[in-house]
Length: 425
Image 1 (cartoon, helix red, strand yellow):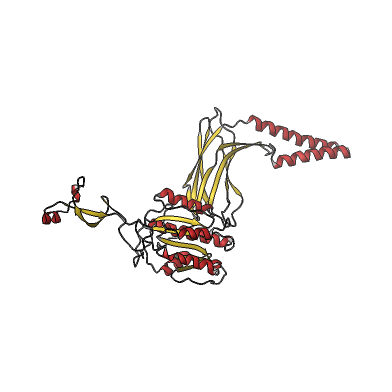
Image 2 (cartoon, helix red, strand yellow):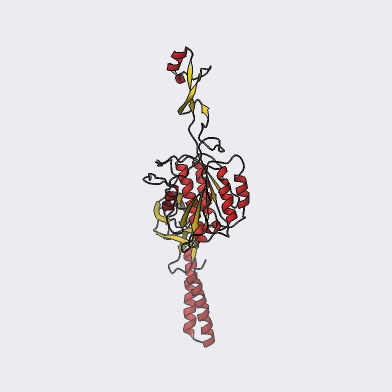
C-alpha cells in the first residue's frame, strides 16, 4: 500500500497534471507524468520482492517488577531459496492497559534494518524493554516491511505473533506483619497445628501402635516403663496473612492508587517470604483465598498488576465476610487518609481485631496532603506519603528489626528475617 510519501507524491502528480491542463504548461504535464511513473515503478518493485521470513521472539523474564528491564531477543530465518531483500523489522509494544495507572499510554516500536539474509540463513537482534508501569502488556506482533527505493510503497508481513509481558507493582522489602500461627485460623494463641508422623518438634509421648515407625521409639522411656513408647511430633507452624485493598473511587486518586497497590504487594511479598499463606481481598469483590505455592502468589501479583480503582463498593460485604468464622491470622487494610476521616469505616476495620491477631491499617496520603483521620484503638496505623518509601514508616510503626535479603527476586523465596520480638500475638 502507498506510504505517506507515496500519497503525497500521488497528490502532487494529480496537482501537476491539473495545473498543466489549466495553465497550458507542458512542463507541468511532464513533471506529473514523472511522479506517476515513480509510483508505478515503486509498486512493481514492492510486488516482485518476495519475502518468506520466519521469526521467533523470546522475552526474558516475562514477569518483572516496575523499574526493572526485560530483554527481548529476536531471531529471523529466511525460508526462501533466494536471499531476502533489505527489510525493516518492527516490533511493537504497548505502554498501557486498563488499570495501568496515570501517564501510561500509547504504543512504541523497536525498529531494525535487516540486511539481505541468504537462503536458510538466520539473523538475530535484541533490545531492552523498560518496565515503567504495572500491567499486562502485549509485545508484538513482529512485522517485516518491504519498501521501494523511494519509500513510496510498502508491504508489511507479520512474521511473529505477540508475547505477553507482565509487570508487577513495585515491591519494597518489608518486615512481615504479625499473624497468628496454627492451622486453625480462628485460634488466638499459639498451639499445635497438628500432630502426625511427619512433624519436626517433640510434642509428647504415647504408647507404640502397630504400624508406627520404629525410628520414633523413645528408648529412655521404653527402658523405664518396659513398654514401647514413641515420640509424638508437632507439625510446623503455618501463618496466615490477609491484605484488604481499598479500591473505592471516592477515596483514591491515580497517584494514591499506585502507592496503595505497591504497599499491598510489598506486604504480601514480605509475608510470603516468611512462609505464610497469603490472601488478597479487594473492595470490588475479589478474594484470592489462601493457598500454598508459587502459582498462587504469582496469581495474586498478576491481579495487582491490572487492578484499577472504582468498581462496586463492596467494603460492607467484605468486612462482614471477614467477621465470619474461618478467618484469622494477620490482617492489613490498605486504604487512604481520606478513608480515615470516615469514622464508620475506621470503626468497622478496628472491629476485626477480635477475629484477627494483629490488624494494621496502611493509610496513603497525597504528596502535598496533611495527615488526617484518627488512629483507632488496638490497631497499628502506618502512614505513607505518595512518592516516599513505605519501608521506613512500616518498620518504625511495627517496631521490628529485620535483616534485608541481598537481592529480592521476582518470585521471592523464603527470606531470613530476624524480628526483635515474636511477631505472633
